[in-house]
Amino acid sequence: MTVNCGARAGWGLSRHKTLNYLEHARAKRSAMAAGFDEALWVADGGEVLEGATTNLFAVIGKEVITPPVSAGILPGVARGVLLQLRGASRVREAVLTRERLAEAAEIFVTNSLMGVVPVNRWDQRVYSLAGMQTTRELTADFERRFMIR
Image (cartoon, rainbow, N blue to C red):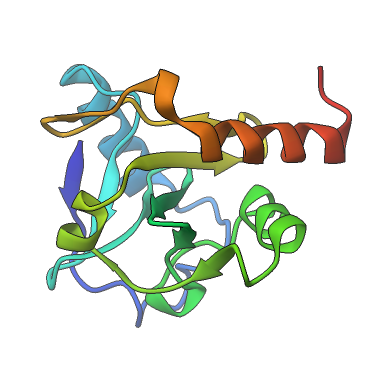
């Protein structure tokens, strides 16, 4: 579920985990009440940022794109691991707009507790989990890195 969050790049605490989590908890609760597992933060200008509790990745063509930290997102440990595992040639930071995200063949989110999680629905768009080859590969890479089974 998409949630408008205004402009976040200038927020001083946006890149730090703090106890000021109320806004995220409210967004997550609203998403769950609407039948979604996560809320997706989108800035006023349409720039896609992150989930309320996750970092976002989009598979567009042969690239995997995640929003840059400079957009005002939390860097995320799992996000950092994927950036290191695959390198800039395959996973890179770039501005994602709602229009650009709509071009994605696959979307997945990450966080340290859940690892790599495929997205099967973003607002009204439905994704086939069976066709998410890149997401499966990155999940396997991530799990091998941490020896998760």
